[in-house]
Image (cartoon, rainbow, N blue to C red; front, side, top):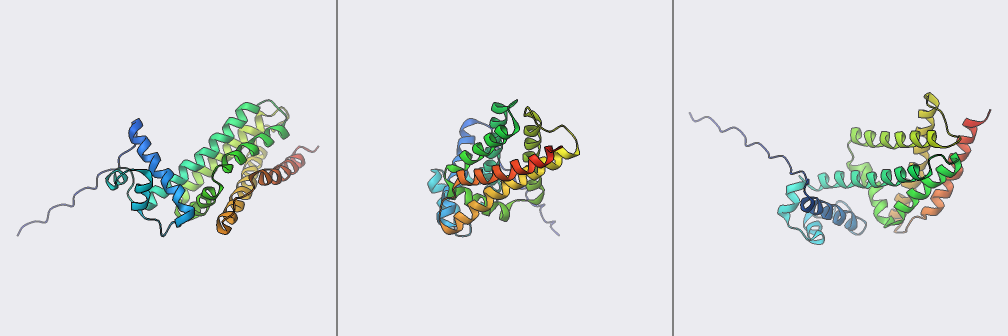
Length: 216
């Protein structure tokens, strides 16, 4: 009796390391995010994505296993954009009073969201749908660490210890919650969120909270 052949191993997806390959991968990610507000995740097809990206189906499957895979990578990329904006603000304002540093962070986040706010709404809605819980938790912790660094680098900042980690987690939870929910609401209503207003609300909440921690 003829033995069945072993299953053919599935080749690993190509990692976009070279510049041209990276540009193709980014083009697909950007096309996906651009189409989300108009088409919605369920209705959006891979064919539409590659048409807007100016690539072919073959190129798509070199980098992504399916639409869900592309969505997860795109969500991660956008989250990193916010981390980089925050990191730049902290580096520029290190040594300044805590209120000034917090304000700079929130304005940097507002500026990052101000570009294509409906796409950010789609990002936050999709984040809840496609993110792996462990990957989501890891990214969340990266923001918490960035906030912890910020709170210690102000001239009147907090010192390392359990209170610092708790404060950093609370700061991120407040800022993330305000930006995310305002953009999801705007996305659902087809209206751009007012990022400057969100930054002002977050500033009032964070400075009030931090003032209580610093009170004698």
